[in-house]
Length: 520
Image (cartoon, rainbow, N blue to C red):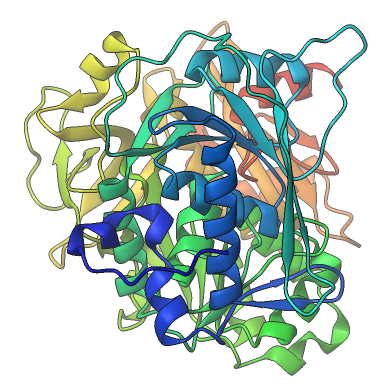
């Protein structure tokens, strides 16, 4: 194994593939990861050695600087090593959801021009399927005195996909937007974008080598990748990778304990699952977390208060999107209760404007579209000039979210512009109605959407999940809504389900709500 070289060029500090080198030098025996059923501790020296070895293996098999590779893996040590080693080899990585259907996976690899697929486990293609590029399977054994790696890598062969245009030497990753309203867009993350966002997360929460977390969010998505894994590793902390490679409410509490977690980050759905399914002895972990972070979807005030009571830790809302390399703003530990409960805090390394529908900046306290600018904002989408023209304006990204900024510079997000319901000219925020519904003690989750109406154009529909043991029905919920909502905001169509449809990152899949109601 090659030794990890000291960092002498300051610019190297901004390269993803070298981000753990300094920790491997100064604190080689510190825990970087805890992995596997046996909860094996992987030190920074061990992790750095695996990254150097895998980087050499990738280059020795014919990959070259600037090549695009796909990464399809669970939340495993293989994911971490493959990502950092590919970045160290100056490859561009496109992360894939491991659960993607074969046809969608192939379509995405073709779009980015991937030469190979890096994976932690071979997954059989359907009968008759023919992969467009080879799978390189990384296997890391952690049962011995030191972790060992093996790369099963056939010849990459010819380039079967057209090279992706528009990439630069500073590009590290290609991320896919959610794609719930069409084909997902390709978002290039540069090393500089990622460094700025990671620093924003680390600074906002004052992360240090004494911090540790559990990777509850999928690492192929920006939330889990930037906030949970990379921000922690960049500051010398420790990350638990769930034994099954994904979030499990059954093992989560043990994972918190084994690493002595000081914080965790997740979407509201996961927070809600933990509240509903936590073991009776969960209070043994009360007071051990410095904070809990919530991002990627709105968290209701009612859920936030329940979480703080159970965990005895402040819940800090954050706000961001793929186009801002994840985090754009966050509530801080020093913020007061009003800021914590009613806003997503102040921008972390970015500038914010609130803009009306004529493109004019709104006065303080006025509602409009949230625009963001700064080093975390990407340069645009790859190969989509039309979307770039409408989304990016003079270095600002139009988020598509409604919001306001108060006198302290705190941002309050009021919902997605495209999700607004227009009932006879009355504009209704689904997120506001959801906030009211979730506050009902008989519900755990709610999703609100517009339903076609011959008289009003649209009326309000709601899909809700009962709390265990609740006998709440539509009449009871409607009666409750009359006390807390304006008449035009009250859902006219209420559907009870066992669970809401979710996207891969765990937020509500609004594109499927109407279909779910129609199928019942």
